[in-house]
Amino acid sequence: MTGTPCVYGKGSFVYDNVTYISDVPNESWGNSTVSIGTIGTALTGSGPAPGYYTTNTRLRVAFKGPGENAVTYYACRERFVSPSTRNCKVIGAGSYTITTLGDARVMTLNSLPVQTAALDYNRVFVERGGHVYYGYQFKPAVYNSARLNIIGTNALLTQLGIAIEDLSVPLALTAASYQGNWDLLPMNSVAPTRTVFISPTGATSCQNRTTMAFYTCTLTVTDPATGAFTYSDSFGNTASGVASFINGTGTGTYHASAATPTDVTFTAYRR
Figure 1: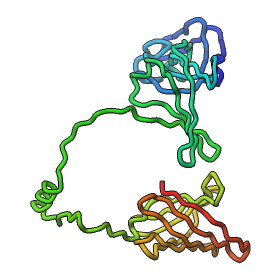
Figure 2 (figure 1 turned 60 degrees about the vertical axis):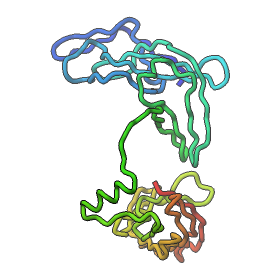
Figure 3 (figure 1 turned 45 degrees about the vertical axis):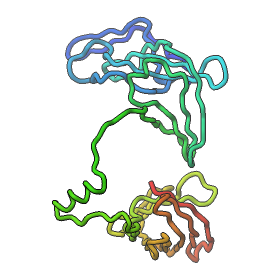
Figure 4 (figure 1 turned 180 degrees about the vertical axis):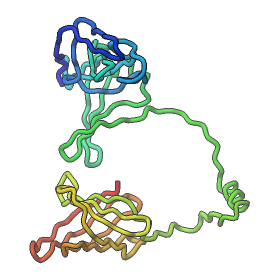
């Protein structure tokens, strides 16, 4: 995304029997910049047409400019019909930083232009398993709320006929505590190969993340206190390991069927 637009002749479209004509030059920037947000909520392709462009401003970034890890920021117009990014203007310059967070590499942008103050988040880009995704970080904000302490909570629960909370009683884990979607990654892999779905009732199902096919499997939490579990599926494969309720992670060994007798160490992460 090097910030090199495609330049066209004067553009036009007909909407609701009215012809709308673009500015000159008529530049398309969508294929050479990346979105970091949009200011405005105007509709595209429906309702009254404000003209060739909407009243929204598309904020974009290109990876160009002087210095190391340079980026250039743009404010762009938005075509009303078949909405696309048009006629961008430079509004600032900065740089990017890439850090490792968990199993992801996260790119953040520095020296953002003042126009981004209208957004309630900052754009980030996240690389996981060889794929890059749009991400966001909410900006710091202050929220005021009134909450009950334990005395007030128990007084309310008593009025409602609900058992009061005793903070001296330790958390008691059950098999249902481990419900959720667990991604399984073979050791040294960067992408999950299996996902185990555990319902609140303890029912389980599995998905092959390579073929995306679902298949029958059973995961049993044999010791809720420690997270010890066993696994089997319709292909004759078995596994055993330990999951952490607090951390949402797990480790184990996958025992392949007799057709391919290979044991694989894996890690697991609850989404």
